[in-house]
Image (tube, rainbow, N blue to C red; front, side, top):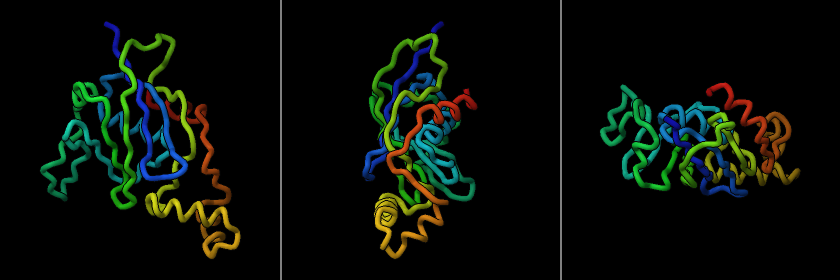
Length: 182
C-alpha cells in the first residue's frame, strides 16, 4: 500500500523578513519526528520546549515536574490523525522567546516515488539565532548588525560569531541534515 505524503509550508510569524520553508513528509509522520523535521528545515537547535496546536488540541512533551492537563503527549500521535480535515496548524517553539509558526498543509497525495522523505523543497531567509529574544529581540539584533555605530553592534557580532546573513538559506544543507532522520 502506497503511503501518502503531505506538502507543508511553515512560516515563522512576527519577523521580517519572512522566514518560510516548503517541505514534504509522510502524511502519517509521528509528531515527535515532525518536530525534528521542523527543527532541521527551520534551523532551530532543539534546545527548548515546543508544542503543536492542532484542531483545538495541544500536543507536546509532557514535563513530569509540571502539571499541564491541557497538553496531550505527542507520543504515538500521527499528523494525519491529529489533523483530520484541517489544513493548518500551529507550532510553538521556545516559550521564553515565543517563536510562533503557522504550518499550512498545501497538499496531500501520492509522493513522487523518487523522492526520499522528508525533503525540503524551498524556503527563504535565515532562521533567527537561538536565544536572541524572540521577534522583538531579533529585530533589535538585525538593526544592531546593520548599523556599525549601534552600541550593541560589536557585542552582537561577537555573540553570533562573526557574520549573520538574514536572507541566507541553503536548501541543499537542509536536505543533508534531513538525510540523518530518514
